Every structure is written in C-alpha cells, then in structure tokens.
Image (cartoon, rainbow, N blue to C red; front, side):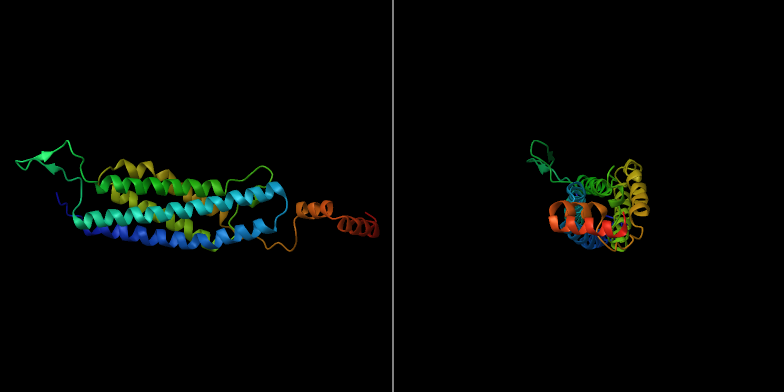
Length: 225
C-alpha cells in the first residue's frame, strides 16, 4: 500500500539529515585535538583518559554516519511507496506466510535509537575521572557546541516525525535532549591556553632522564628550595 506523507514530515527528515551532517563535520576538530594532546602526554593514566575520549568521539561519528544512512533509507522508502507490503495469494489477498517488506516506521525507530546511543557516547567521552576531572571539557568548544546543539535538534526532529506512529517516543527521548543541553553547557566552556607541560609530565621527564633530574636539582638548589 502507498501512504501519502505530509510535506512537514519530509521537511523534518531533511532537516535532521542536514543537522547530522553538521554534527559529523564538527566532530573532526575535537578528535584531532584529542589525538594531538594524547601524543604529547607521557603520564599513563592521563593518556589513557585521552585515548578513551578520542575513541568515544570516533564512535559517535560512526553512529551519526549510520543514522544518516538510515534516514536516507526512510526517505527513499516513503518516496517509493514501500511500507510493509504483503505478498498476495491467487485471489489477490494478503499472503502472510511470506515475509513483508520493511516498513518506514520500524526503520525510523532505528534512527531514533542510534541518536540516543550517540548522545550517550558523547556523555561517556566527557565523564570526569577522579584523578583528571579537568580533562572532561571540549578542546574545540566552538565546534563541539555546534555538534551537540545540532545532534539535539536532529533528535527532536526525528522524534517529532516518529510521533505520527508513536507519541510516546518524544517523551521517551526528551531526557536525551535535556542531557545534550546540559552536556553542551558543561563541556563547551573556553579552555585556558596552557603555557607549558603539566606537573605530571615534568615529573615523568625528570624520572626518565638523569640529565633532566640533575638540572632540576641544580635549579632547586639555586632558588634555595
């Protein structure tokens, strides 16, 4: 059967895809910055936290890419009139023993689920650790602010679209939208420019190189420390 979709429905899908493309593009700068910081960090635990953060950003990008493909599939199914058609028996009635064609509603719900997973993954990326809580901020706050707000907008649009099938979905994912707002406010503040290595990195360098250790002792002796 062919189902007519109101123009507003397709507008929401197009808007969501545009927002998710923006999310995907905006994540690049943050991932690049985290990788660069990781390469310069010698402290094991600090480095491990940076690796975890970078992996979460990469996973989010993969999930967003997958979601864009799913939404494109939904758009194509609607445009082609594909929505759970049955095979037909000899009299032309629905023939249930054979599988039906996929429905756009079920495919759309996959997209909603993936967007919820993307939000949760970003949350894990910026979860403060006990030893290094200061790392849980965006390195590129401008780009991450765009990424988080665009992801929130896309999730809202997809939920609104799916509400024509199930009104409860919007309520189900309202907390995810609120979470993205709070995450944006917490992690997208301006990060002070660090003028030199951290205390942990200095200590690691002293332990690793006897020449550095001797220079440090000499400096302390000169200052009377």
